[in-house]
Amino acid sequence: GQNIDQPTEMTATEGAIVQINCTYQTSGFNGLFWYQQHAGEAPTFLSYNVLDGLEEKGRFSSFLSRSKGYSYLLLKELQMKDSASYLCAVKKDSNYQLIWGAGTKLIIKP
Amino acid sequence: ETGVTQSPTHLIKTRGQQVTLRCSSQSGHNTVSWYQQALGQGPQFIFQYYREEENGRGNFPPRFSGLQFPNYSSELNVNALELDDSALYLCASSGTSDGDTQYFGPGTRLTVL
Figure 1 (cartoon, chains in turn orange, green):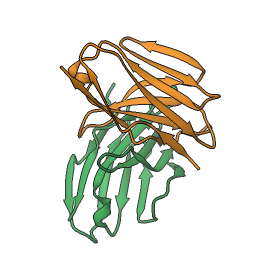
Figure 2: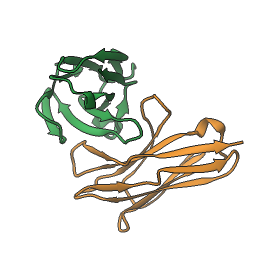
Figure 3: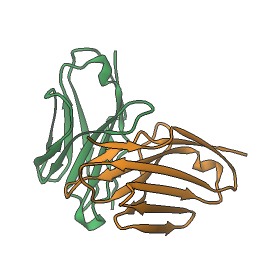
């Protein structure tokens, strides 16, 4: 079966750092995506990892370990606008289908 | 370059009715994927179209159908609407030029009464 797990909700303080974890068990793997989704809006692309290691993009970084079926999204210098849900999605095999986690709701407090 | 667009933004229907949702893909993209997202859940894959052919389908009944046009825009049709069909319907386009990253439209919020 296909399974992607993320924490349901996390709380962090403005200016701090937060790490959102994602573990996956899928029958195939051809890359992992992170998306941000504000309430009532569509997901927006943040990062894509296909090889092991850390990808850094400004305040956001994403890490992948294929052997452990594990990824995390690291958000630095948190801002109030970062309050959103963060979705982890795995691309199976060579087709375009994405398997999605339920998302982690991140609450930023002043 | 225009992004992914969807229409309508919101829609209210009653049980048993039929609905058609539309999506225009991003310029240069030849693949469209449709998702259903219930409140507080991740998107659920409905199906995908690549160059006018269905290229994979999720666990949705046959009353969910679709098509893709030569300009790569797409439609999602849902027949015999049920209350549980109330959700945000998302369309995402992708193409090899963008490394297969899926870019989403704003979604259509469907309410079935």
